[in-house]
Amino acid sequence: MRVIPAIDIMEGNVVRLVRGDPRNKTVYSDDPVGTAKRWQDAGADMLHVVDLDAALGLGSNLETIRRVVEGVSIPVEVAGGLRDEKMVEGVLGFAPRVVLGTIAFKNRETLKKISEKFGSNRIVISADQQGGRIMVSGWREDTGIGLMAGVKEYVGLGFGEFLITSVDRDGTLKGPDLDSLKKACGISGAKIIASGGISKLQDTVDVKCAGAWGVILGKALYDGKITVEEVKKIA
Image (cartoon, rainbow, N blue to C red):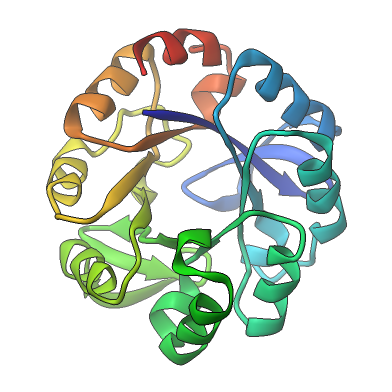
């Protein structure tokens, strides 16, 4: 299982939100590049970097994210606010992977064009779910598409990696949504990255046992409740 620390960036700072709410924010660092190097040195397999300002329509941290990608040697997947073809292509010009949610579920033709140009292996489909339905637009819009149906459909379209975030648990330290995770991991052809609710080492063991290909570490990591080194030992 891949161990993937999250670096969520807002106004140039490394932050964590609770359930994606910018009013419920904790700032952990004003140095995203230094934070990235710290997790790399700890043994992270990959980094998950999110532009929260872009996701919420409040601005952009693109140049900061470029510096993060250039400052480490491990792979970085970039997420947040990548909602048009030009922006996605720009990020794929310097980052190995992008995480696409809104554009994937609202503009399939654009998704298809990007996939044909860069390869589906550089695209992670973001299936953020609340109540079993996929959410987009910074978790503010319900697509009406069921999580399992959505993952199966996009596997059929040629995509293999999916980031599943349980919106209600993100940043809450209440534990992962193992029921949804097990079902998603059981879908043939889908590699699942689990995100949301990780609070202790046992949660990462449970996620691995559910069949996850990777796990995102967020608030628990920043609050010192778990370490990259500990999770690597069980991964």
